[in-house]
Image (cartoon, rainbow, N blue to C red):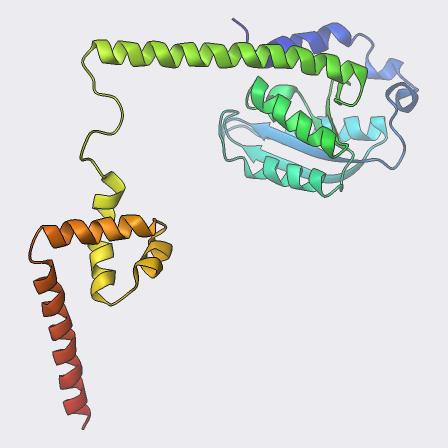
Length: 259
């Protein structure tokens, strides 16, 4: 089944009939005012691809539509990649009201999924910024046409969420049927066990639980639990006392050698 973005891409083809050359009054038709600023966003999926064609086409598109290009942002990475630094910069640019529109070759270049696309469109609407595909279709939720598209996208997004939920439940049921134990098992403390040596070393240095928690990005209660478990294990106080004695002896020797 085609994804929401694919369906929307086909809808763009249906609604776009006349080529650019037959639209001499582009600004009047699409309400673009001279002097409006646009950010160009280009994305390719792999390193052996280039954003050059997208950048060239979008720059020409901006010139025809009467936009002043405020910035060009290029990115390499899968559409499903969560950390898209350049897109974050474009969103920050839009939030600062530095642009009036974001130009993309097609929606799949901008949105990771239908849900992601809808969420970003809503954010951009609150900042009065539109996403415009090269087909000339404007995705602006403040217009009747944009709200209609948002309604379609919401339905597709809900359908996608239901499909994902169904697949997750099906996978969990299959794993249980195979005898797999799900989730963290009783007694397992992966992060806590991994940090135990560091926590104990810092306690030996006389650091407070609060300081250790902040330094290692864990809770104070986790630090206390680690300390408690190692006390219960026996020999903890002896180890602490031994290390403190070694440090005191080392300091004494250093003092004697200095004198």
